[in-house]
Image 1: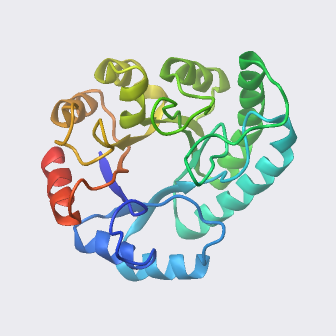
Image 2 (image 1 turned 90 degrees about the vertical axis):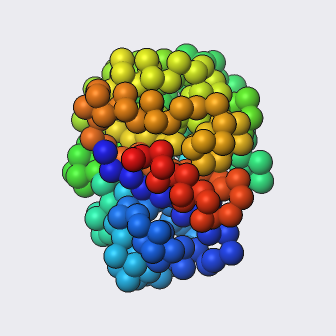
Amino acid sequence: MKYSLCTEMMYGKLSFTERFKAAADDGFEYCEFWRWEGRDWNAITNAVKQSGLKVSSFSGDDKYSLVDPEDSSSYLDFLGRSIDKAVSIGCPNLVIHTDALNPADGSAKKIKADLSHEQKLMNAYDLLKKSAPLAAKGGVTLVLEPLNTLVDHKNYFLSDPDISFDLIEAVASENIKLLFDIYHMQIMKGNIIERLQKNIDKIGYIHAADVPGRHEPGTGELSYGNIFKALKESGYAGFVGFELSPMGDNGKAIEAIKRSIV
């Protein structure tokens, strides 16, 4: 497995671009971040290059919805530009979502149309099918992320891991996989190891943080030693991204992360 550190939630006293060097200094080979729009892309690429890190993922859809038919054209256009950014920096994965999120509280932005669950699911399926050739052409993998609606992302559509796996299977593209965020899926349904093992072929990326609090491994109820052992035994060789907020200082969080992957 390959391990990545999300610089969005770490090194809070540093500027965004300074965090890449900090991650490299802490021994990471890969990093990830969230949005690229509204940030200085040249500054990002220069900071990443100078740090010696490689980028494993960033967000590919930002403020557009996968389930809202009014967003379809804009979604594909933005996704195309995100793929171009990923190619330019050598990033193999783009994280995508079913809903745009409100920056203030993480809730899903309300869409105009009054759509049923089935209509939203079909809209997501149709747009994913259209997105797959774009991803294939760019040589990147789009990793669709279910999120929890009980703590962090109220009204987000794709919150059930089993429905998410069914959707990935239906789309049937090697360039469309699931981002299984262990923190979010523990909150929603639990049974983490069995779900990972049963669906390992549909998973393209994993996020890790403990529950509750979204802190480093060892602070909550999850046994990351057992989870990572099960992943290795299942043959998973992809990325595990530590997307977490340190409970205390950054140094102790980094130590806990490293202990979990030994």
